[in-house]
Length: 509
Image (cartoon, rainbow, N blue to C red):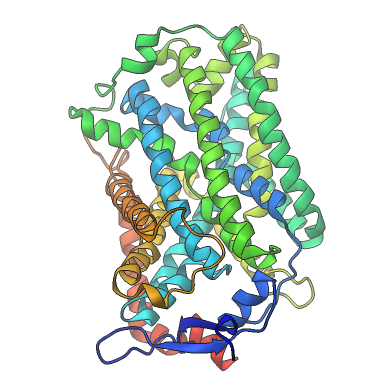
């Protein structure tokens, strides 16, 4: 066997370690092939189950529409205005863009090694310096919870924006929270049925969403710049706000306001969970992920600046009766015309709706799609939608729960990758995509991503308003704690016997 037909990797029984705790390095034959998919599958002993039919363009469009960066900025910039003001939005977004790009680049390295739908829990098992079975199971709990909770975000935004427009257009309409719940059900059923019976339509729908995402960007910019109520440069670049929320320390208010920037840039790992349906995944998945984060971030930042320059009075936007500050801004841009406001909001609602089609992965032998996971996700969204009937604050905890658990799931494999790069870099079978530059550059990017991630995790569970009461408390951190305790109990009782880890499970198959 020649050197080029040999690949170094830690053993496929990856839970074994030498006496000093170093990963066991073995040599495994790799058939001569130019297909990176075949390389990844054979090196890790996996079986290809899903059909690979997606290329770079659909994946770039999928990741772009999944993030909906500038559209999400429209929906969520009110949180940054409330805590931190324009300064937190403008400069905070740059901080988040740098940190998120570092996170995506770190994930890109691991995705190029093993582009698998399980992503984080596989990587945690592969790279953990000890107890890989435990970390893999806990990581799986966090990732699954994050994405199931995350699916509920888009239908929540779309449904509440629609009811806000109903309030605007029909003065006699009395909004009830159960109206939002019914709309959420209707909205989430459409992509569910499309994923089951219209799977071949997903790729063109993702491309359509990407085109819509790009084409509408300059149109909305022109409308806002030409018709908006102009603010001064001092307002955009120097105005700090922290007296509205009750947080007297501006550093805390600034950090809390970052949620407006964290949320639009998060969820970039969605493309990873479709990796087993992507052609040439070790190259396409990392490239699409990093490019989508950077391009989306740049688009969103310039859109945010244009919005702040032309949004009018901050108090009117924050005190609107139409649900979202952007609806009030569009109402003023349309010169008080409900029809004009409907048209402007329609573009944003449509993009958010299209982002749902790819978020909804055991695989059904009949449909060749993860049918049970689809119904589990939709069922969870249905159940969670009831929460807002009793308390909007409780449902907001579910929204923050998505970002918090996502960032926790980001940290674990990256920390393990850093440890492996420091202790035993020769055991890492790097794929065709790596962070540019010498090895120390990649390590520095990995470390920066962890510092940024920990900073965001600290402030995500904070309440946005003081004094803190039962009604305005952010319960996201409590929910995460409860889930982690439940996951730990699962491991101690049945999980450690039932879950052998992805590597050993594959070996047994």
